[in-house]
Image: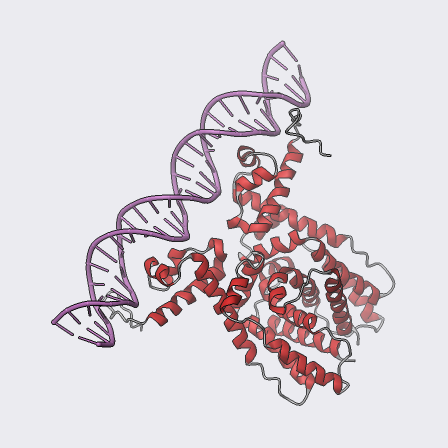
Length: 216
Length: 216
DNA sequence: TCGTTAATAAACTAAATAGTTCTATAAAGA
DNA sequence: TCTTTATAGAACTATTTAGTTTATTAACGA
């Protein structure tokens, strides 16, 4: 089923630095996301990426640098996911609905993003500023949100005096928290929150909350 | 200014096991909250609590046990805070307002709670189940919420078919996330979220969101 | 006053792990 | 064919740190 058969003939060794580096980063994200900076083990990353420590330290120079690269990669995923949200329809209500749903889905479908950000926050964003130097991390979602809210206000559908950044925070909160704190919530509430039905319920509630708040 | 003057006469050594253990736990919460389980250092806890490692290991037998005690202590604080919420007024709308505000304030005023829970979640609630064995951690907030929602429904003020647990999650989310993810949010949004005005705005928005969702 | 035990302090062990070094192999391009 | 360099991997070092041990001090109750 798999081309890699250690048991049979020796696998042909392919030389592809870029791809190897990406494989290392992917494994690093897995490891850092699972165990955090302190808990992560370079040896584990070497093993999972099917490389070795010498190679990792050749491409990245320290655990810290590798972590920063992983963090930047995570944010790239987040931005990519946010860029896909289609909000060009004529109905602002429908657009907001989509935005809230998509934001929710992003967190639902990318536990790696949620966990990496959580780790970063719990460390007081120790490395995020450095990751920022690598790539601009500004979220495109804010602009989209701005446009659709204005439109809704002009059409008389939405209330006045909406704080955009705080609205963005709340929309994120309603999705993020469900997944970031799922473990303790499940225990304290004694409920399985990973079921599709439960997730759908939370998603719909988030949409309704935001929309009923916006409507005048 | 302080009774402890190492420079002057030797401080009288007081024997008070219970208080010493509490001092150790307090310091442990500080350390675990700041650095997480892996990052925390027993030596640091010894220093901060003005005790020593031998004593710590006499009272608690391992880092893990000390962490669990700290976690249980954190939940005790959370419950205590939730128990104070007064929701016995005649107006369900006002009661919900208070509940959302108090929940928000709990997280605003107790960063230790937020951080401990975040650490625990990022470790897949590795220790919470054990902390549960020590003390019942069921949140009293859920019962209060149940009563007030029912009342509001009977009075025709609130919508039907409200999922209590999910509502509880959303109310928590709107407060918790703001503080748990404040660091990355501040960077990405380029805004100081620790200002009193910003906090007040988020709080009011949370109240409005929940209330406009509940109202029929 | 005496024995128990809470508290102090320092040195130590054992294990884990980030980071280095060295040697070897083989793919790709010239 | 030859040279460069990506890859592999093992052994090593230096450091950190959980947990132990041992010795000492002094508060408090009997």
